[in-house]
Amino acid sequence: PRDLAALGAGLTAARAIVAMLLDRAALPAELSKASRALSEIDPDLPARLDATLAEELPLNRRDGRFVREGHDPALDELRLLQVDSRKVIAQLQARYAAETGCRTLRIKHNAMLGYFVEVPQAVGEDFLKEPWRATFVHRQTMSDAMRFSSVELGGLEAKIASAADRALKLELGIFAALSEAVLDQAEPIKRAAAALAEIDVAAGLAELAAREGWVRPLVDASEAFTIAGGRHPVVEAALKRDGKPFVANETDLSPPGDGAKGGRICLITGPNMAGKSTFLRQNALIAVLAQMGAFVPATSAHIGIVDRLFSRVGAADDLARGRSTFMVEMVETAAILNQAGPRALVILDEIGRGTATFDGLSIAWAAIEHLHEVNRCRGLFATHYHELTALADRLERVSNATVRVTEWKGEVVFLHEVVPGAADRSYGIQVAKLAGLPPAVVERARTILGELEKSEREKPVASLVDDLPLFAVPQRRAAAPPVLPAEDPLRLALDGLDLDEMTPREALEALYRLKGMS
Image (cartoon, rainbow, N blue to C red; front, side, top):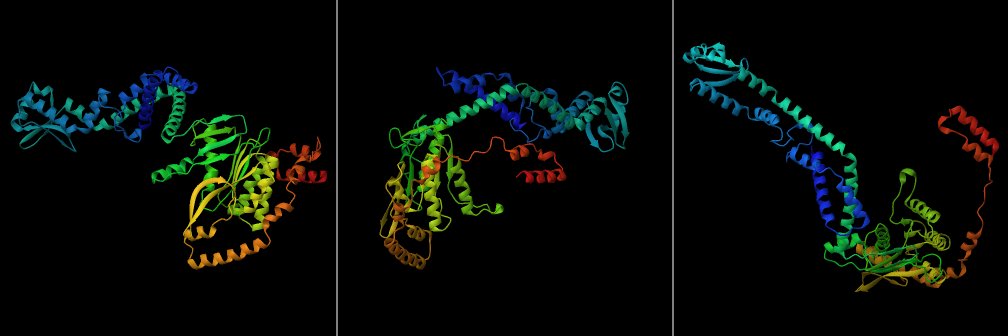
């Protein structure tokens, strides 16, 4: 019953929406199509559902009492008998008393006789005579009273006894008729539901854009990716609830010049908690919003079509399958490097941090080279390996950005502003202090950091940039991949096997044959 009521309310709302849309002189193609779909609904169906179903509905039809009072007179009579049988009996008693002139006439009930009429002994003698003999049937004589039944009272008793069952049967019949009427309109209702969904999405996005000051992006077939005043919609909403502003940022991943092939890869450095991950995610979200037809949280946006979005952020393991956190990271990175194309957008957060320093630096270094020379995609690469920022001087489409911070009385202050340039430090010890590490641990970490930085100055890792063959990647890319023979007998034999139909013995024999061919 509740499903039917919800459907009826939805259809009523749909017709109201149609009336609103018809008032508009011109509608976009999607809304015009949705309006036509809503107009196909039978106008009698929602009215019939509303007129039949009660205001308060049970969860299941077997519980009954879901048909509105006044809809079916027979059902109303059965309900009256079921719920207010005393009132019906009292009405019959008053009528019998008035007709016979016996003010002491009573209708009573017991387990043996059921309902019966009881009158004093003297009056009961008259009931044995005409004209009352035809109405009342003698049932029992007491010392001071006589008891009678009547055809009307017997029928009323039977009705009262079966009223609940018959009322539920009537209601289930009404329910079946309503269900049949709904099923007859199944296809128009499905089209109306789809149309309402389209209208709901359009209206929801429009309301959000108007309320939050979003703008209409320019989406075209170029490789552009320029966002001014970009914001993360979820983080911004959370900050707004606390009365705090969100710091908007610029992004430019467009090709660096006329004729350049492939978008920029931006290396973002800066401390933890500064907002690097938020910056990565907000740009991915803006790309998705733009291509789904929504306005975006920015002051302006020009985005060339993104055919695939790849994301490698966060830390997770899959121990049940024998994968550590670093292994999961590498599997996801491998998927990106093997699949991303020139129109892809890639966001990578802290690649290589789950292993030894030089291992991780080497992997991140090689991944950037591959993205630049092979994938040629637009990308945002957040890292704590400051050595990687030197790649911007060697690779045409790699640029550097950093999240600004400042220090005040020994405390780090995050400004959440992304600007061109590279960070000179990660402020990890300050973040550790904010997290609540014991003061002794923090001070010891400062001492060790000073020693390590001293050794770095004596033999900087960044000098490796001048020694490594950074442009070996294009040469490897130019090498032709191995080509398999047009007709490999082993592959043909494998293709001819129907593994689902083979017995274990047949499978073993096939394996020996294949081994002999290898």
